[in-house]
Amino acid sequence: PYVVVSNHQSSLDLLGMMEVLPDRCVPIAKRELLYMGAVGVACWLGGIIFIDRKRTHDAISVMAEAAHTMLSQ
Image: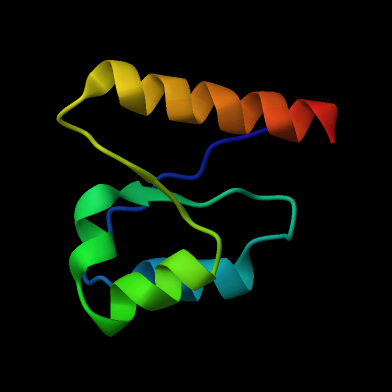
């Protein structure tokens, strides 16, 4: 297992990474991207998991649930 952290220059970088990374990777993005019009809809349809960085406990719970799902599958 590994973690890829992207210091993206635009909101479209995440969509490009989805094409490059293997299928078993789980993309996680800040919740603010969800509200960026067509980009947010494309990210949501692409299966990106959104986290609220202002609510640290909730973000950790979402990531832990994603990790648990990946391990069980």
